Amino acid sequence: MKISEINIGDRCVAKVSGGLTVVRVLAIRETWTARGDSKRVIDVVNERTGRRLTFRSAARLRRHAGNPQPVKEAP
Image (cartoon, rainbow, N blue to C red):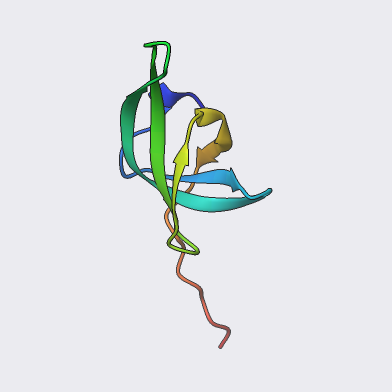
């Protein structure tokens, strides 16, 4: 995905520790490198574990995740 396609509060499928999982975007912020260049980073939280992560590239985000579907139990 591109950083322009991401909004705060979005739920996305992302690659975390070699596997795909759903994360929620907490913030998109601008940081500065040692050379004085600016770069955007994405703060997310892993919805399965609750752990906060910082993505330095939007390439780790694969697609938007749909709303969780309620599980229908068999009669």
